[in-house]
Length: 132
Image (cartoon, rainbow, N blue to C red):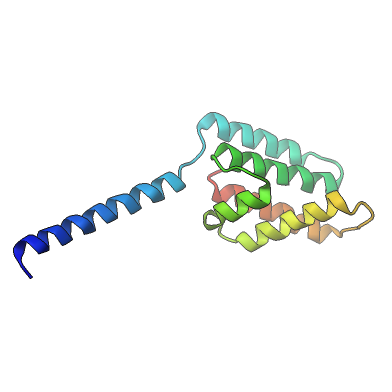
């Protein structure tokens, strides 16, 4: 290998590392203090709901708002597909969102307290993973 090819390979490696680093930094950007305060206020309002079903619906909406503020677009399902690596347990977030969908679309369905609490904890963990 010639010295010039070694230099070119080194430059390409460094450029690749810089691009990957910038890409990761952009994906991991967080919310501004103002947006974080908004999400915290919305979360407190969601938890103050009297009816468990509405509590799940509101928690789901708070997560959707946080992802929107982070620049994700589409339905919450679409945003979860795009933002999945940000979550420590994306499957739990999906389960919580699916419970929300059942509540929203199957009005006669009943849910026990442990399902509701598990969903709320999953939404809370998701917000924590986003820097809340």
